Length: 363
Image 1 (cartoon, one colour):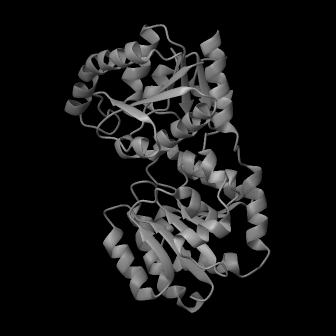
Image 2 (tube, helix red, strand yellow):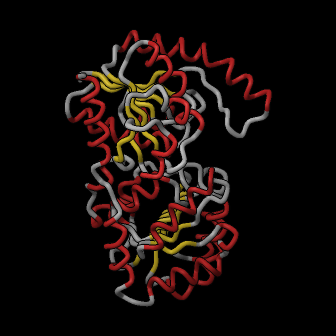
Image 3 (cartoon, one colour):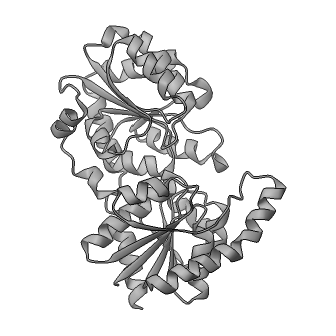
C-alpha cells in the first residue's frame, strides 16, 4: 500500500484514532491524506500533526432539527462529488472512515469508485453514519466487541481503539519538567475532552477548597475548553495549588505522562488512552451519550477496580474531593488501579487497523 486516505473528524473522539493510524502508516513509508470539513477540529489539529488535509462540504444530522436534517441529506451528493475529486487526484489504495461529518460522503464516494473501504468504529453503539456505511464497507474495526451486533456478520474485527504511539513514549520525569511541575507530588489530570466539560470544570473548581490541606501533596493539569478557561483558571489561582490550566492541551502525551490520576469523561477514545497507559481514573460519564454508552464504558473499568465512577448528577466539589482523598489514603490503591487499568488496554490497536487496511489494499 502506497497511499491511505482517512476520512472524518469533527471531534477528537473521531479524529485522533485516525491520526494514530496515520502515524503508523508514515513510519512504513505510506503517504496519508485526511479529508474533513471546515467546521471540525481537524482544521487545526491535522496540520499541527504534520498531515495534509482536504476539506469537503458535509453537515450534521443527529440532534439537528428537521430543516437542518433535510439540508444535510441534500448536501451529500455535492460532498461526495468533492470527495471523489480528492480521491481521483490522490489515488489512495484504501480509504479509512473514522466517523464524523466528512466520513459519510467520502466513504460513499470511495465505495462508488471501487476503493477498498474500512471503518473504524470507536463506540459500543455506532452512530447513524457508520451503521449505514457498515453495509457497504469491506471491514469494520471495532473498539468494543458489543459493536458487532450493529454490522453485517463477518465484517467485524475487534482491534481496540487506536491511540497515538507518542502517548506511550514520553518519560514522566521529562514531562513534569516540560510542564513545570514537581516530581514529589501526585498529579491529577482533568479533562472533559477537546471542548471541555463545564460540569467537570465546576466540580473540580469546587473540590479545590476541600483539598486545600493537601497542597503539599497534589498538583493539577486541567484542560478546560475555551468557554470555561478564565473562570477555572481564576479558581486555581485563588486556591493556591501548583497547576497548569489550559483551554486545550496539544501535548497530551506529556499531560498523560505526568498524571497519577485522571478525572475525565468515559468516551471510547478516552478509555482507550487511559487503559493503554494504565492510568487510574475518576470517570464522570457524559449523561446524554447515545444508549448511555459512556456509563457502560465506565462501569467496565469500575468492575475490574481500574476506576471510580461518579455520575454527572453527583459530580459536586465535595464528592470529587472525597474521591481524590480516598485514592490517596492508602499507598497501595493507585498502584493496584494502575495494574488493573493496564490489563484492559490495547496499545497496538493502530498497528492492527493499519494491517487490515494494507491487506485489503493488496487484495
